[in-house]
Image 1 (cartoon, one colour):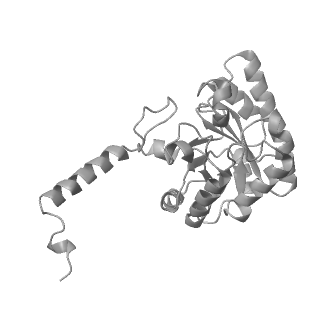
Image 2 (cartoon, one colour):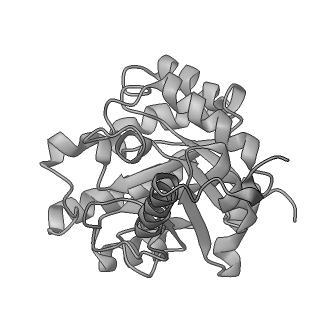
Image 3 (cartoon, one colour):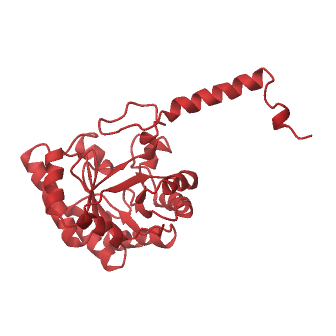
Length: 266
């Protein structure tokens, strides 16, 4: 199985083949995801909430993102690796945006970057692409703008905001992004955008009419304790299984059953 490239992802749209994308934050899970033949591995700034324990993604730094992207890239031989541009890594200036995006490719081993926003970041998107850095767009619910949006709420439910998201999608395609993540928007709006754009759309909480789907790996595996958003499907209850395994270890240690003869050197 060869390495997936950006032209491969673009071709999926014309061929009508759905795209699978998952997050990964370290070498171990990157290898597991890659061995499962996932198309795109996103080193998401969601690591701020699921790995670092923050309430939002906002505290995540560029150096932390590069650190995690480097680990993931070493574990992937098949999937396309995309690095997530963290808060304030591209908003300040075009020059700083290019420099930070370039670090994902140069230091992190990623093939592309993802960045949130529409009309407000078009100048940065164009500059990055002109510099040879592939960009994946992201519209709808923008986690880095959680305070501005008043929380993690579905976006585009009224006519005005729906039109803004639709226009952002058009502008991002025109700027040259190779794919577009649509997060937390009504299914009808996602269907309209997907049917209009020539580039693939990848949904998370955007319904079934997108060209692909993405989930946070820890949500999919049931590793997180908090209630899951409506759009998450848990494919395994690993948190409960991990706790049970650790409890059995504790009991074996307390009762002198571990280590036994099989775990001892003779």
